Length: 393
Image (cartoon, rainbow, N blue to C red; front, top):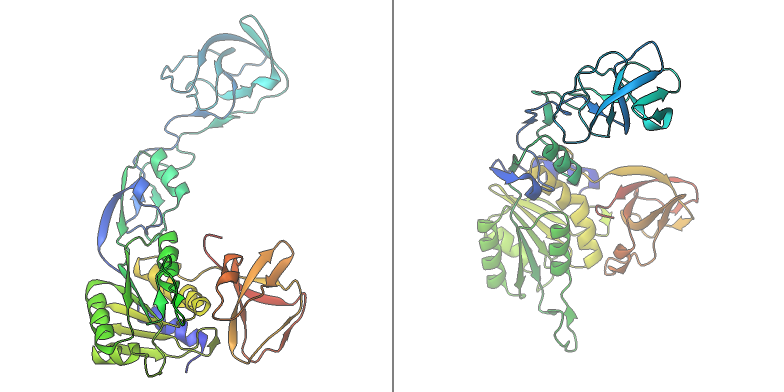
């Protein structure tokens, strides 16, 4: 049995980046990792641009100006202004080359074709210079950037329509257990509804991993071996829930050995999720997650998520961690390191009720996991703890 830090390091050490590069339209590239730098082909803005509604002027040594025209956004006329002349201008409109300031309309009084300006005017005030945001030939986005909505907006403003990204991993989620019944069916005595597979595929979808398959397997050695072998053959990452322990009807470990999956580690000194398996076969990563749903989801965020991020080329793999004070006292149960479902509020973090590895309900209210070091007994109110921020919360 190994500690959490070692397990995390081993997962990343034995994971590999998918090198296949695909080209997507920018609107379809959300949450993909950029595989090649994007270079701007234009200055942005591409012309001197007004930052205000007001008047563009060619400065004179007096405060009264003659208004000789109007420029609105989208106009392409570059009016020639003499000293002492002005044009009415609107936000986003191109500023004439001969203008050297834009005066906001609140500082102007107008009388027919004349305006009077109140106060001193600085050179180039309220003018966005050409290329202020980015210049032609500069790198707009660097390789390794995870594409977000704001990036798509920025690229669109530069006229970019397609980008090269790393292909996301293909993922198989395998659930095992004779007692599992699909939601919607009637339960017989001793049966429970299958939730792990539904949960994990939903979380994967939420995180942008659309290419996942859900495979259900009964507790049978040959069936388990065949399902695992086919999943490994057809996917980049295989996630198994349940069946990784050493009970008479836990066939996953035996099947993995039979199909020659290399065991990197099995069992981690943590709660929940002690019976965690991680292995490799060629370039395929295989996780054996605990069958209890809260344990399975905790292990997913701590171990599977970083591997998925690395596999798609992301430079940042782990979920964000912060140090934050406890809102109230908490008595720790057990001596292993623990990942506790928690809620971050304005004044700190609160450990939620329902921490059993079999209970998933608290995850719905959680936006973080608090990591409690091993051999801790009591966490005091106001004491700083390490919190791992959950995504999409």
